Amino acid sequence: MSRKQLPGRTDLAAWASELGFTGCGIAALDVSAAAPGLRDWLAGGFHGEMDYLARHATLRSEPQQLVPGAVSAIMVALDYAPDDPEWVAAAWVNLENPQLAYVSRYALGRDYHKLVRKRLQKLAERISAEIGDFGYRAFCDSAPVMEVELARQAGLGWRGKHTLLLDRRRGSTFFLGALYTDLALPPDEPVTEHCGSCRRCLEVCPTQAITAPYRLDATRCISYLTIELSGSIPPPLRPLIGNRIYGCDDCQLACPWNRWARSAVVSDFAPRHGLDATELAELFAWTGEEFAARMAGSAIDRIGHERWLRNIAVALGNMATPGGAGAAHLRSIVALRQRSDHPSAMVREHVQWALACHGGS
Image 1 (cartoon, rainbow, N blue to C red):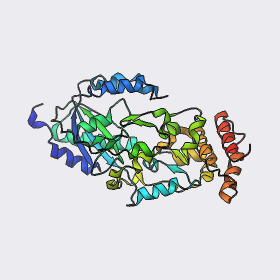
Image 2 (image 1 turned 45 degrees about the vertical axis):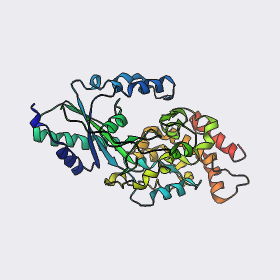
Image 3 (image 1 turned 30 degrees about the vertical axis):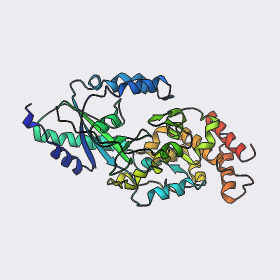
């Protein structure tokens, strides 16, 4: 394929924009400079139970083994921030109300994985319509891909001290997608970093999981504890989780750059089933069937009903205050007692811990 047949940067950006992507850049498919950092992180055991990260480390650091013949990555961004200019303040209010469940803002609507991949597929089809058949494969948190590093190289932002990608135009509230391709596209230039001396993300982390700038101990991260961890949540970390039942946004909420976060252009990311303002006791009452029906098509579905109850039990325990006897306090105790004989030993153990927080078993 001759060079003149390749799509131009302007064309790619326009086609991506038509599909709702708010960022588009190109990176050469070479992440060798980031590979040593990944190996050191894995060697430190910071990945916890996420064994797939170690198992597929070579595929992450050597992309051509994942997609033979690929030489470029078309990287895209898709915003998901709530459609509310005061969404950061609203999120803090939610976190400060122990009666309400807090769900990470990215998971309030439909699952982004398939949505982003489908749009990447359409982008590939648009390119193919212009230049003919070419080799490609679309990814969105679905394979061993260094999305943040490639997006950094593609000029979509810089890696913040919390390890997420940051962009001066949209903060960090966006999903990343990658289209590996055999097209030798001219790469974009990385942007400069703009975190400066700011340490707000490190200081605000409830569990101090960001152990140093650009270094995350996933085994302490609330997102890991409530989503990736399959077993019992370590008791010393439970009080630090607060009312966060799926994921955590604190490092993003504290980041000054998220003043510029852009509202989602995709209606699928709007909150479903009142997950942005629902009492813990109400969610704890969901049966397995209700959970499956309401979380179908949601990223939350992946943790299953058992871990859903585990997480909410911890949050209900964290509602306890010395001498607490209000209506919400009593509802939490009643809700916990109704699950005290749950078939799952893990759920029962977390329920008993929560009841003990309220002063009894």
